[in-house]
Image (cartoon, rainbow, N blue to C red; front, side):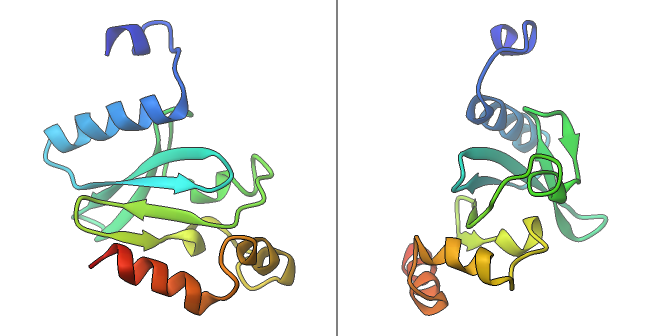
Length: 126
């Protein structure tokens, strides 16, 4: 951990893995989020608010799920959440453009329709 935190060098995956490990060591449930446009972070389950909270340790940002699309200008298509027990599509949390034609066209580059996408998640969770 020291070489990563002292000079603040590392990639998003390294920061996400390390921060997630620390959170789990403190008793928090976490899930690893993969954005298909090349970024990863974690979400931490809050028992108090009963919801998953975005925690991007690479950026030092907590609970700002709109930052990727609004702040970074990312053109999201899929954001996938993975725990040791499940894989889920969490894209809707990270975009306000989910129902726009342009957004759906980007998603269809990976899955031709929502039914295909749901089948992938169903298989991943068996």
